[in-house]
Amino acid sequence: MNFPADQIGHQVDLTLMVVLVIALALFFDFTNGFHDTANAMATPIATGAIKPKAAVLLAAILNLVGAFLSTEVAQTISGGLIREGEGGIQISPVMIFAGLIGAIVWNMITWLLGLPSSSSHALFGGLIGAAIVGAGFAAVDYGVVVSKLLLPAVLAPLIAGTVAYLGTKLAYAITRRQGSSAAPKRGGFRYGQIFSSSLVALAHGTNDAQKTMGVITLVLIAGGFQSAGSGPVFWVIAACGLAIALGTYSGGWRIIRTMGSGLTEVKPAQGFAAETSTASAILASSHLGFALSTTQVASGSVIGSGLGRKGAKVRWNTAGRIGIGWLLTLPAAGGVGALAAWVAHLGVAGIIIDAVAGILIILAMYVVSRRSKVGHDNAISDVDQAGEVVKIKRKRKKKKDRLEAGQ
Amino acid sequence: MSIDWFAFVIVAVATLVASMTVVGFYGLGVRLLAVATDAAPTRQPAVRLGAYACFAVCVAAVLYGIYLIVPAFH
Figure 1 (tube, chains in turn yellow, brown):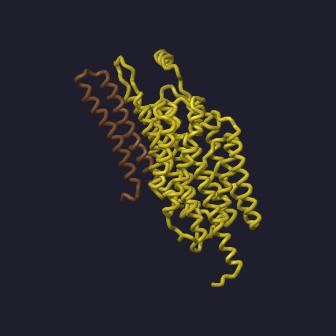
Figure 2: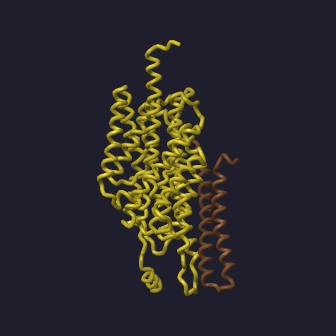
Figure 3: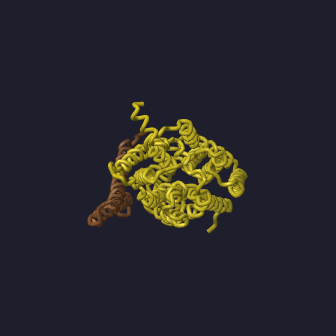
Protein backbone atom coordinates (compact mmCIF):
# COMPACT_ATOMS: atom_id res chain seq x y z
CA MET A 1 0.00 0.00 0.00
CA ASN A 2 1.47 3.25 -1.08
CA PHE A 3 -0.12 6.33 0.28
CA PRO A 4 1.30 9.64 -0.79
CA ALA A 5 3.48 10.94 2.01
CA ASP A 6 1.40 14.03 2.66
CA GLN A 7 -1.80 12.01 2.95
CA ILE A 8 -0.27 9.86 5.66
CA GLY A 9 0.85 13.03 7.37
CA HIS A 10 -2.71 14.34 7.14
CA GLN A 11 -4.11 11.15 8.68
CA VAL A 12 -1.66 11.41 11.59
CA ASP A 13 -2.61 15.06 12.09
CA LEU A 14 -6.29 14.16 12.12
CA THR A 15 -5.85 11.34 14.63
CA LEU A 16 -3.69 13.55 16.82
CA MET A 17 -6.30 16.31 16.69
CA VAL A 18 -9.09 13.90 17.63
CA VAL A 19 -7.05 12.52 20.54
CA LEU A 20 -6.28 16.07 21.68
CA VAL A 21 -9.95 17.04 21.58
CA ILE A 22 -10.97 13.92 23.53
CA ALA A 23 -8.35 14.68 26.20
CA LEU A 24 -9.47 18.29 26.42
CA ALA A 25 -13.16 17.30 26.56
CA LEU A 26 -12.51 14.82 29.36
CA PHE A 27 -10.57 17.49 31.23
CA PHE A 28 -13.54 19.83 30.81
CA ASP A 29 -15.78 17.07 32.16
CA PHE A 30 -13.48 16.62 35.15
CA THR A 31 -13.57 20.34 35.99
CA ASN A 32 -17.34 20.24 35.66
CA GLY A 33 -17.58 17.56 38.33
CA PHE A 34 -14.94 19.36 40.38
CA HIS A 35 -16.87 22.59 40.29
CA ASP A 36 -20.37 21.27 40.83
CA THR A 37 -20.06 18.88 43.77
CA ALA A 38 -20.92 21.76 46.03
CA ASN A 39 -24.25 22.18 44.24
CA ALA A 40 -25.36 18.72 45.18
CA MET A 41 -23.81 17.91 48.49
CA ALA A 42 -23.05 21.13 50.38
CA THR A 43 -26.36 21.30 52.22
CA PRO A 44 -26.53 17.84 53.81
CA ILE A 45 -22.88 18.16 54.84
CA ALA A 46 -23.56 21.55 56.38
CA THR A 47 -26.54 20.31 58.37
CA GLY A 48 -24.52 17.34 59.56
CA ALA A 49 -26.89 14.80 58.03
CA ILE A 50 -24.04 13.00 56.29
CA LYS A 51 -20.28 12.81 56.81
CA PRO A 52 -18.30 14.76 54.20
CA LYS A 53 -16.30 11.74 53.06
CA ALA A 54 -19.42 9.64 52.53
CA ALA A 55 -21.25 12.50 50.81
CA VAL A 56 -18.46 13.09 48.31
CA LEU A 57 -18.11 9.39 47.55
CA LEU A 58 -21.87 9.03 47.16
CA ALA A 59 -22.04 12.00 44.79
CA ALA A 60 -19.18 10.61 42.70
CA ILE A 61 -20.78 7.18 42.37
CA LEU A 62 -24.15 8.66 41.44
CA ASN A 63 -22.50 10.92 38.87
CA LEU A 64 -21.06 7.80 37.28
CA VAL A 65 -24.37 5.94 37.37
CA GLY A 66 -26.18 8.99 36.00
CA ALA A 67 -23.89 9.10 32.99
CA PHE A 68 -25.16 5.70 31.89
CA LEU A 69 -28.86 6.50 32.17
CA SER A 70 -29.52 8.30 28.91
CA THR A 71 -27.91 9.60 25.73
CA GLU A 72 -30.55 12.07 24.54
CA VAL A 73 -28.56 15.17 25.46
CA ALA A 74 -25.39 13.78 23.88
CA GLN A 75 -27.29 13.31 20.64
CA THR A 76 -28.62 16.85 20.77
CA ILE A 77 -25.01 18.02 20.67
CA SER A 78 -23.48 15.44 18.34
CA GLY A 79 -26.37 15.13 15.91
CA GLY A 80 -28.39 18.32 16.06
CA LEU A 81 -26.62 21.47 17.19
CA ILE A 82 -23.93 21.57 14.53
CA ARG A 83 -24.73 20.26 11.08
CA GLU A 84 -22.40 17.51 10.10
CA GLY A 85 -21.78 15.54 6.93
CA GLU A 86 -24.08 14.55 4.05
CA GLY A 87 -24.02 17.65 1.92
CA GLY A 88 -24.15 19.86 4.97
CA ILE A 89 -21.21 21.74 6.29
CA GLN A 90 -18.29 19.61 7.37
CA ILE A 91 -17.17 20.50 10.83
CA SER A 92 -13.54 19.71 11.43
CA PRO A 93 -11.89 18.43 14.61
CA VAL A 94 -9.87 21.67 14.59
CA MET A 95 -13.06 23.71 15.05
CA ILE A 96 -14.21 21.54 17.94
CA PHE A 97 -10.78 21.96 19.46
CA ALA A 98 -11.05 25.73 19.12
CA GLY A 99 -14.53 25.67 20.63
CA LEU A 100 -13.30 23.74 23.68
CA ILE A 101 -10.41 26.16 24.16
CA GLY A 102 -12.94 29.00 24.01
CA ALA A 103 -15.09 27.35 26.66
CA ILE A 104 -12.18 26.65 29.00
CA VAL A 105 -10.78 30.18 28.66
CA TRP A 106 -14.18 31.75 29.37
CA ASN A 107 -14.66 29.50 32.40
CA MET A 108 -11.29 30.60 33.70
CA ILE A 109 -12.12 34.29 33.25
CA THR A 110 -15.48 34.06 35.02
CA TRP A 111 -13.99 31.96 37.80
CA LEU A 112 -11.25 34.52 38.40
CA LEU A 113 -13.66 37.45 38.36
CA GLY A 114 -16.16 35.61 40.52
CA LEU A 115 -18.91 36.02 37.92
CA PRO A 116 -21.78 33.59 37.99
CA SER A 117 -21.49 31.52 34.86
CA SER A 118 -22.49 28.19 33.42
CA SER A 119 -19.83 25.84 32.16
CA SER A 120 -22.42 24.17 29.94
CA HIS A 121 -23.27 27.40 28.20
CA ALA A 122 -19.59 28.20 27.89
CA LEU A 123 -19.17 24.87 26.09
CA PHE A 124 -22.05 25.51 23.67
CA GLY A 125 -21.00 29.11 23.13
CA GLY A 126 -17.43 28.08 22.32
CA LEU A 127 -18.59 25.38 19.90
CA ILE A 128 -21.07 27.64 18.12
CA GLY A 129 -18.56 30.49 17.83
CA ALA A 130 -15.87 28.20 16.45
CA ALA A 131 -18.26 26.54 13.99
CA ILE A 132 -19.45 29.90 12.65
CA VAL A 133 -15.91 31.15 12.08
CA GLY A 134 -14.77 27.82 10.69
CA ALA A 135 -17.66 27.04 8.39
CA GLY A 136 -19.93 30.07 8.21
CA PHE A 137 -23.30 30.86 9.76
CA ALA A 138 -24.97 27.92 8.03
CA ALA A 139 -22.92 25.47 10.11
CA VAL A 140 -25.17 25.89 13.13
CA ASP A 141 -28.74 24.64 13.32
CA TYR A 142 -30.40 27.63 14.98
CA GLY A 143 -33.67 25.75 15.40
CA VAL A 144 -31.89 23.31 17.70
CA VAL A 145 -30.08 26.17 19.46
CA VAL A 146 -33.38 27.84 20.29
CA SER A 147 -35.52 24.79 21.07
CA LYS A 148 -32.99 22.60 22.90
CA LEU A 149 -30.66 25.18 24.40
CA LEU A 150 -31.94 28.74 24.75
CA LEU A 151 -35.57 28.05 25.64
CA PRO A 152 -34.70 25.31 28.15
CA ALA A 153 -32.15 27.71 29.67
CA VAL A 154 -34.97 30.15 30.42
CA LEU A 155 -37.85 27.77 31.07
CA ALA A 156 -36.21 24.98 33.09
CA PRO A 157 -35.03 27.23 35.97
CA LEU A 158 -38.49 28.87 35.96
CA ILE A 159 -40.22 25.50 36.11
CA ALA A 160 -37.86 24.24 38.82
CA GLY A 161 -38.26 27.49 40.77
CA THR A 162 -42.06 27.43 40.63
CA VAL A 163 -42.20 23.78 41.64
CA ALA A 164 -39.69 24.38 44.44
CA TYR A 165 -41.87 27.26 45.67
CA LEU A 166 -44.96 25.04 45.71
CA GLY A 167 -42.97 22.15 47.21
CA THR A 168 -41.71 24.31 50.06
CA LYS A 169 -45.25 25.52 50.78
CA LEU A 170 -46.44 21.91 50.74
CA ALA A 171 -43.65 20.66 53.00
CA TYR A 172 -44.35 23.36 55.57
CA ALA A 173 -48.12 22.91 55.34
CA ILE A 174 -47.96 19.15 55.85
CA THR A 175 -45.61 19.34 58.80
CA ARG A 176 -47.40 22.20 60.54
CA ARG A 177 -49.04 20.88 63.65
CA GLN A 178 -51.58 23.20 65.08
CA GLY A 179 -52.45 23.06 68.72
CA SER A 180 -49.62 20.72 69.44
CA SER A 181 -47.37 21.67 72.24
CA ALA A 182 -44.48 19.93 70.53
CA ALA A 183 -42.32 21.70 67.98
CA PRO A 184 -43.12 20.91 64.32
CA LYS A 185 -40.12 18.53 64.28
CA ARG A 186 -39.02 18.99 60.75
CA GLY A 187 -35.65 17.45 61.57
CA GLY A 188 -36.56 14.40 59.48
CA PHE A 189 -35.96 16.50 56.39
CA ARG A 190 -32.29 16.65 57.30
CA TYR A 191 -31.96 12.98 56.52
CA GLY A 192 -34.28 13.38 53.56
CA GLN A 193 -31.68 15.70 52.13
CA ILE A 194 -29.24 12.83 51.78
CA PHE A 195 -31.86 11.29 49.53
CA SER A 196 -32.68 14.46 47.57
CA SER A 197 -29.00 15.45 47.21
CA SER A 198 -28.28 12.03 45.81
CA LEU A 199 -30.96 12.62 43.21
CA VAL A 200 -29.34 15.92 42.28
CA ALA A 201 -25.97 14.17 41.89
CA LEU A 202 -27.61 11.55 39.68
CA ALA A 203 -29.32 14.20 37.55
CA HIS A 204 -26.05 16.10 37.30
CA GLY A 205 -24.29 13.02 35.95
CA THR A 206 -27.10 12.43 33.50
CA ASN A 207 -27.12 15.89 31.98
CA ASP A 208 -23.54 17.12 32.32
CA ALA A 209 -21.58 13.98 31.49
CA GLN A 210 -23.67 13.71 28.35
CA LYS A 211 -22.49 17.09 27.12
CA THR A 212 -18.93 15.80 27.01
CA MET A 213 -20.13 12.58 25.39
CA GLY A 214 -21.79 14.71 22.73
CA VAL A 215 -18.59 16.66 22.06
CA ILE A 216 -16.45 13.52 21.83
CA THR A 217 -18.99 11.84 19.57
CA LEU A 218 -19.06 14.98 17.43
CA VAL A 219 -15.28 14.92 17.01
CA LEU A 220 -15.32 11.20 16.22
CA ILE A 221 -17.94 11.84 13.53
CA ALA A 222 -16.05 14.87 12.22
CA GLY A 223 -12.84 12.84 12.08
CA GLY A 224 -14.59 10.08 10.15
CA PHE A 225 -14.24 7.47 12.90
CA GLN A 226 -17.96 7.14 13.39
CA SER A 227 -20.92 7.45 11.05
CA ALA A 228 -22.94 10.67 11.10
CA GLY A 229 -26.07 10.61 13.23
CA SER A 230 -24.94 7.77 15.49
CA GLY A 231 -24.97 8.05 19.27
CA PRO A 232 -22.08 7.81 21.71
CA VAL A 233 -20.32 4.45 21.87
CA PHE A 234 -19.75 2.59 25.13
CA TRP A 235 -16.17 3.62 25.88
CA VAL A 236 -17.11 7.27 25.39
CA ILE A 237 -19.97 6.95 27.89
CA ALA A 238 -17.74 5.14 30.38
CA ALA A 239 -14.87 7.62 30.01
CA CYS A 240 -17.16 10.64 30.47
CA GLY A 241 -18.87 9.08 33.48
CA LEU A 242 -15.50 8.32 35.08
CA ALA A 243 -14.11 11.78 34.37
CA ILE A 244 -17.05 13.58 35.98
CA ALA A 245 -17.07 11.16 38.93
CA LEU A 246 -13.34 11.66 39.53
CA GLY A 247 -13.83 15.41 39.29
CA THR A 248 -16.65 15.26 41.82
CA TYR A 249 -14.57 13.12 44.15
CA SER A 250 -11.53 15.37 44.07
CA GLY A 251 -13.54 18.59 44.09
CA GLY A 252 -15.45 17.55 47.16
CA TRP A 253 -12.54 18.09 49.47
CA ARG A 254 -12.73 21.78 48.73
CA ILE A 255 -16.18 21.93 50.26
CA ILE A 256 -15.05 20.34 53.47
CA ARG A 257 -12.52 23.11 54.00
CA THR A 258 -15.19 25.73 53.58
CA MET A 259 -17.78 24.30 55.93
CA GLY A 260 -18.87 26.86 58.41
CA SER A 261 -17.90 29.85 56.25
CA GLY A 262 -20.93 31.73 55.09
CA LEU A 263 -23.23 29.11 53.64
CA THR A 264 -26.61 30.47 52.77
CA GLU A 265 -29.13 29.56 55.37
CA VAL A 266 -31.37 26.91 53.86
CA LYS A 267 -33.71 25.04 56.17
CA PRO A 268 -33.89 21.27 55.72
CA ALA A 269 -37.54 21.20 54.59
CA GLN A 270 -36.86 23.96 52.10
CA GLY A 271 -33.65 22.34 50.86
CA PHE A 272 -35.43 19.04 50.40
CA ALA A 273 -38.14 20.67 48.26
CA ALA A 274 -35.55 22.60 46.24
CA GLU A 275 -33.38 19.57 45.56
CA THR A 276 -36.30 17.37 44.64
CA SER A 277 -37.56 19.85 42.06
CA THR A 278 -34.03 20.42 40.73
CA ALA A 279 -33.53 16.71 40.20
CA SER A 280 -36.98 16.20 38.65
CA ALA A 281 -36.57 19.12 36.27
CA ILE A 282 -33.10 18.04 35.14
CA LEU A 283 -34.01 14.39 34.70
CA ALA A 284 -37.18 15.21 32.76
CA SER A 285 -35.28 17.66 30.56
CA SER A 286 -32.43 15.22 29.96
CA HIS A 287 -34.97 12.69 28.78
CA LEU A 288 -36.17 15.13 26.11
CA GLY A 289 -32.63 16.01 25.05
CA PHE A 290 -32.51 19.51 26.54
CA ALA A 291 -28.92 20.46 27.26
CA LEU A 292 -29.36 22.38 30.49
CA SER A 293 -27.11 24.20 32.84
CA THR A 294 -27.55 22.25 36.07
CA THR A 295 -26.30 25.24 38.02
CA GLN A 296 -29.04 27.44 36.61
CA VAL A 297 -31.78 24.95 37.38
CA ALA A 298 -30.49 24.47 40.92
CA SER A 299 -30.32 28.25 41.37
CA GLY A 300 -33.91 28.58 40.18
CA SER A 301 -34.99 26.01 42.74
CA VAL A 302 -33.08 27.61 45.60
CA ILE A 303 -34.65 31.00 44.84
CA GLY A 304 -38.11 29.49 44.43
CA SER A 305 -37.91 27.54 47.65
CA GLY A 306 -36.65 30.62 49.50
CA LEU A 307 -39.70 32.54 48.32
CA GLY A 308 -41.87 29.71 49.60
CA ARG A 309 -40.88 30.53 53.15
CA LYS A 310 -42.64 33.05 55.29
CA GLY A 311 -41.65 36.67 54.97
CA ALA A 312 -39.29 36.15 52.05
CA LYS A 313 -38.23 39.03 49.84
CA VAL A 314 -36.25 39.08 46.63
CA ARG A 315 -32.97 40.98 46.51
CA TRP A 316 -33.35 42.16 42.94
CA ASN A 317 -29.78 43.49 42.75
CA THR A 318 -28.24 40.09 43.36
CA ALA A 319 -30.81 38.43 41.08
CA GLY A 320 -29.98 40.88 38.31
CA ARG A 321 -26.25 40.32 38.66
CA ILE A 322 -26.69 36.55 38.34
CA GLY A 323 -29.05 37.00 35.38
CA ILE A 324 -26.56 39.20 33.55
CA GLY A 325 -23.78 36.66 34.14
CA TRP A 326 -25.97 33.97 32.61
CA LEU A 327 -26.90 36.09 29.60
CA LEU A 328 -23.28 36.98 28.98
CA THR A 329 -21.92 33.44 29.00
CA LEU A 330 -23.14 32.17 25.64
CA PRO A 331 -22.08 35.12 23.45
CA ALA A 332 -18.86 35.71 25.38
CA ALA A 333 -17.72 32.11 25.15
CA GLY A 334 -18.83 32.23 21.52
CA GLY A 335 -16.51 35.18 20.97
CA VAL A 336 -13.56 33.41 22.57
CA GLY A 337 -14.34 30.23 20.59
CA ALA A 338 -14.53 32.25 17.39
CA LEU A 339 -11.19 33.87 18.14
CA ALA A 340 -9.62 30.48 18.84
CA ALA A 341 -11.05 29.10 15.58
CA TRP A 342 -9.72 32.08 13.67
CA VAL A 343 -6.24 31.53 15.12
CA ALA A 344 -6.46 27.78 14.42
CA HIS A 345 -7.20 28.53 10.77
CA LEU A 346 -3.73 30.01 10.39
CA GLY A 347 -2.58 26.41 10.12
CA VAL A 348 -0.37 24.27 12.31
CA ALA A 349 1.16 27.35 13.94
CA GLY A 350 -2.31 28.56 14.88
CA ILE A 351 -3.25 25.23 16.43
CA ILE A 352 -0.04 25.28 18.46
CA ILE A 353 -0.79 28.83 19.61
CA ASP A 354 -4.27 27.70 20.71
CA ALA A 355 -2.91 24.66 22.49
CA VAL A 356 -0.21 26.63 24.29
CA ALA A 357 -2.74 29.30 25.30
CA GLY A 358 -5.05 26.59 26.59
CA ILE A 359 -2.32 24.89 28.59
CA LEU A 360 -1.17 28.21 30.05
CA ILE A 361 -4.71 29.04 31.10
CA ILE A 362 -5.15 25.64 32.73
CA LEU A 363 -1.82 26.01 34.54
CA ALA A 364 -2.75 29.50 35.67
CA MET A 365 -6.05 28.18 36.97
CA TYR A 366 -4.18 25.52 38.94
CA VAL A 367 -1.66 27.98 40.38
CA VAL A 368 -4.33 30.48 41.39
CA SER A 369 -6.46 27.76 42.94
CA ARG A 370 -3.52 26.65 45.07
CA ARG A 371 -2.62 30.18 46.13
CA SER A 372 -5.97 31.81 46.70
CA LYS A 373 -7.61 31.31 50.01
CA VAL A 374 -10.77 29.34 49.85
CA GLY A 375 -13.50 31.70 50.82
CA HIS A 376 -17.19 32.23 50.65
CA ASP A 377 -16.95 33.94 47.26
CA ASN A 378 -14.93 31.41 45.32
CA ALA A 379 -15.46 28.02 46.86
CA ILE A 380 -19.13 28.12 47.53
CA SER A 381 -21.16 27.26 44.49
CA ASP A 382 -23.11 29.59 42.28
CA VAL A 383 -26.23 28.02 43.68
CA ASP A 384 -25.49 29.44 47.08
CA GLN A 385 -24.98 32.77 45.45
CA ALA A 386 -28.50 32.36 44.11
CA GLY A 387 -29.69 31.65 47.63
CA GLU A 388 -28.68 35.15 48.57
CA VAL A 389 -31.26 36.49 46.17
CA VAL A 390 -33.94 35.71 48.68
CA LYS A 391 -34.03 37.60 51.91
CA ILE A 392 -35.84 35.84 54.68
CA LYS A 393 -37.03 37.53 57.81
CA ARG A 394 -35.51 35.87 60.82
CA LYS A 395 -37.88 37.18 63.45
CA ARG A 396 -41.14 35.55 62.61
CA LYS A 397 -42.81 36.70 65.75
CA LYS A 398 -42.36 40.34 64.90
CA LYS A 399 -43.84 39.77 61.50
CA LYS A 400 -46.84 38.04 62.97
CA ASP A 401 -47.41 40.94 65.31
CA ARG A 402 -47.30 43.35 62.45
CA LEU A 403 -49.71 41.24 60.43
CA GLU A 404 -52.12 41.25 63.31
CA ALA A 405 -51.82 45.01 63.52
CA GLY A 406 -53.17 45.03 59.99
CA GLN A 407 -50.07 46.15 58.13
CA MET B 1 -37.91 26.57 12.86
CA SER B 2 -40.25 24.26 14.70
CA ILE B 3 -40.26 24.47 18.45
CA ASP B 4 -41.75 21.59 20.32
CA TRP B 5 -43.67 23.52 22.97
CA PHE B 6 -45.34 20.34 24.11
CA ALA B 7 -41.95 19.09 25.33
CA PHE B 8 -41.82 21.99 27.80
CA VAL B 9 -45.31 21.16 29.03
CA ILE B 10 -44.13 17.58 29.63
CA VAL B 11 -41.10 18.80 31.58
CA ALA B 12 -43.27 21.15 33.66
CA VAL B 13 -45.92 18.54 34.44
CA ALA B 14 -43.38 15.79 35.13
CA THR B 15 -41.39 18.06 37.44
CA LEU B 16 -44.51 19.17 39.28
CA VAL B 17 -45.99 15.69 39.73
CA ALA B 18 -42.68 14.05 40.71
CA SER B 19 -41.68 16.76 43.18
CA MET B 20 -45.10 17.06 44.77
CA THR B 21 -45.32 13.30 45.21
CA VAL B 22 -41.88 13.00 46.78
CA VAL B 23 -42.11 16.14 48.94
CA GLY B 24 -45.71 15.41 49.94
CA PHE B 25 -45.13 11.84 51.02
CA TYR B 26 -41.81 12.58 52.67
CA GLY B 27 -43.44 15.46 54.53
CA LEU B 28 -46.25 13.19 55.62
CA GLY B 29 -43.70 10.64 56.81
CA VAL B 30 -41.86 13.29 58.82
CA ARG B 31 -45.14 14.43 60.33
CA LEU B 32 -46.18 10.91 61.24
CA LEU B 33 -42.83 10.29 62.92
CA ALA B 34 -43.37 13.44 64.96
CA VAL B 35 -46.92 12.34 65.78
CA ALA B 36 -45.62 8.94 66.84
CA THR B 37 -43.33 10.42 69.46
CA ASP B 38 -46.27 12.27 71.01
CA ALA B 39 -48.81 9.49 70.62
CA ALA B 40 -49.90 7.04 73.26
CA PRO B 41 -47.48 4.09 73.56
CA THR B 42 -50.04 1.62 72.19
CA ARG B 43 -50.57 3.62 68.99
CA GLN B 44 -46.91 4.35 68.37
CA PRO B 45 -45.99 1.30 66.24
CA ALA B 46 -48.95 1.81 63.90
CA VAL B 47 -48.16 5.48 63.30
CA ARG B 48 -44.50 4.69 62.82
CA LEU B 49 -45.40 2.05 60.26
CA GLY B 50 -47.46 4.64 58.41
CA ALA B 51 -44.43 6.94 58.34
CA TYR B 52 -42.22 4.21 56.88
CA ALA B 53 -44.90 3.45 54.28
CA CYS B 54 -44.74 7.11 53.23
CA PHE B 55 -40.96 6.94 52.86
CA ALA B 56 -41.35 3.77 50.81
CA VAL B 57 -43.75 5.59 48.46
CA CYS B 58 -41.04 8.25 47.93
CA VAL B 59 -38.42 5.67 47.03
CA ALA B 60 -40.85 3.87 44.73
CA ALA B 61 -41.77 7.15 42.99
CA VAL B 62 -38.12 7.95 42.36
CA LEU B 63 -37.35 4.46 41.04
CA TYR B 64 -40.38 4.66 38.74
CA GLY B 65 -39.21 8.05 37.45
CA ILE B 66 -35.77 6.67 36.68
CA TYR B 67 -37.32 3.61 35.04
CA LEU B 68 -39.27 5.95 32.75
CA ILE B 69 -36.24 7.82 31.46
CA VAL B 70 -33.81 4.95 30.93
CA PRO B 71 -34.16 3.70 27.36
CA ALA B 72 -32.48 0.39 28.25
CA PHE B 73 -35.61 -0.62 30.20
CA HIS B 74 -37.98 -0.14 27.29
